[in-house]
Length: 169
Image (cartoon, rainbow, N blue to C red; front, side, top):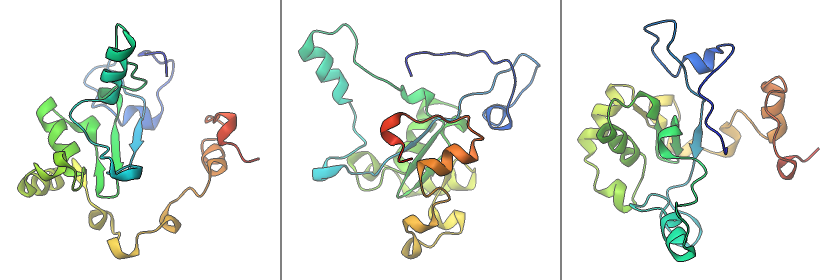
């Protein structure tokens, strides 16, 4: 991900869906979906005020924090609580509310007002499992469309070329 190409020779439907074109010079965005559980192994919250990368940079004397994907590049945030359509956010504050709405019982999620979640759902900015026709009690890996990395490669028509460590074939 060490690049930031903004241009494009052709427009795919997915790329165009990430914008509302007003002129022929508008651009879409790469689809960047971050899928995380609200808590990591050992009970460490995924959603934090400051990235660990900041402390890593400070301790190592680095000029910048080693960040591979910046938050403003993420178009969708998917957790066990729901999905936030971040590309639709109209402001930083709204983006933060959307993230908090799917942050579960982390400190960030607990500070979030449930009334805001309801408003975000009504506006189509956040979707909870029930909004997608999924009963939380029935949610399991079997409901996932893709069962393997090979499925993703096949469905992309070969456009997705995963790193070797993710290939089982």
